[in-house]
Image 1: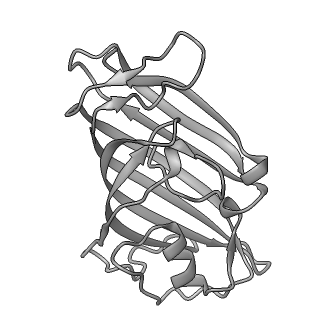
Image 2: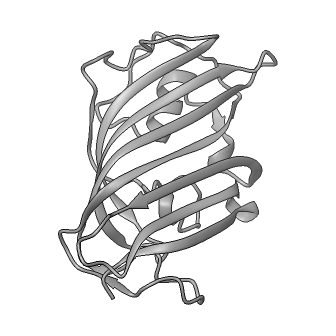
Length: 203
């Protein structure tokens, strides 16, 4: 999955996004598209994606939407939804870590496919500003700081059971041995329970 660095000391394969991004010109990060008490903010990101081994295996181009819901108790539920495409870089396959037989070891460069997934957790200790704007590369930490303030904490960035994610990657045909990889889990930090299934692999 988009490996986004959200958990200190944890190689969250599907969750470590570490490259540049561009704000989507559709709403410029100002929350276009409010529905049933939810505020939505959409950006376009280009990023490297780390596999289960913690090293880059693909370059991703994603449409990312943050959905903010007021819990009514001073906290906010933030869900990050990603949808886009990936192109493999070559080297170790993203799902090569597990010891079961349903995965490969390597993937050649240039394999293309689609990715979709989400990450959801709770923001506390901040004040939500729906009119805030985010830097061009609006990754999760940037979004939390911009829209909730520097003192806000996100449960997916600390030791917590209050985090959930699920990312799926598919690459039909292209002479692959494995065509689907999933990275899902619950919790964060020392409480992370993560499961890898399948692979995108040529061998």
